[in-house]
Length: 186
Image (cartoon, rainbow, N blue to C red; front, side, top):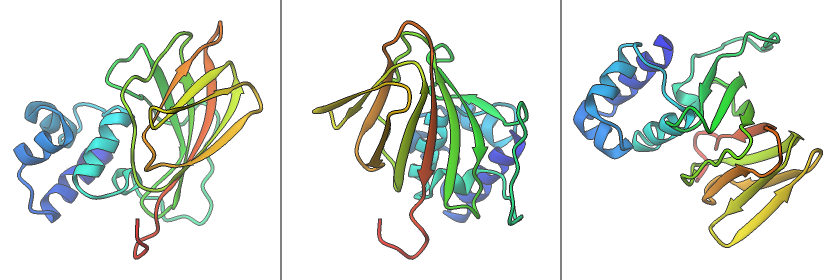
């Protein structure tokens, strides 16, 4: 938690951006941003993406650095957080992801009937593989894909997207997000 806050503060200072400006651009309150920067709160994934976008960074740039060539995440050790600022909708565990890595892998659980109502939109690419349950993925408000276990979908992450669980139970999803490498156009 503290490492993410430290990274947010450092990136904000490098950008020469006052805390109030970043808070406004990311759609969070200044006191909440202060709590994040001081390690007293953990951002939802949605909030992390909004802060990264406001700083013109990828979310991976705000995750703790991992310089190793091999990263192993043992069962039960991955850090978890809510996806949106509503803790009842969905929960994600970041399995792999750091500023030095182009790929972030998350295991996402969307509770039965859970709906991630806000549109997500960010640089890079996203691959989704449904492990359990049923999910409807809406893309750009005009395309809907219904996924069942074993189904997969890829899309440009710049395409506005959101998910909802439509089965009787929770949906468990493997999400791989690939960042745009530095120096390549978005």
